[in-house]
Length: 90
Picture 1 (tube, rainbow, N blue to C red):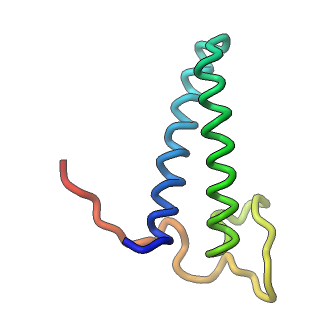
Picture 2: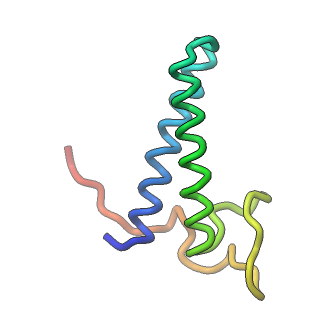
């Protein structure tokens, strides 16, 4: 697995954790342990996304990433969801 794919996998894993904690906090808004974990994972996610975008270009085209350089990088291949990787069987 290359470094780009590893970074995307880390982003996906932490995004899953933040979404899961977000849903939990919708029904348990006073759980400070969960809120602290959500904030910690959100900070990690922001740092990983920033790192990915500095190295490989934007992850989305909806105003979350500043285009750097002389061309519109969003159209460059491969897009994040077009990454080839094999899923291990359970």
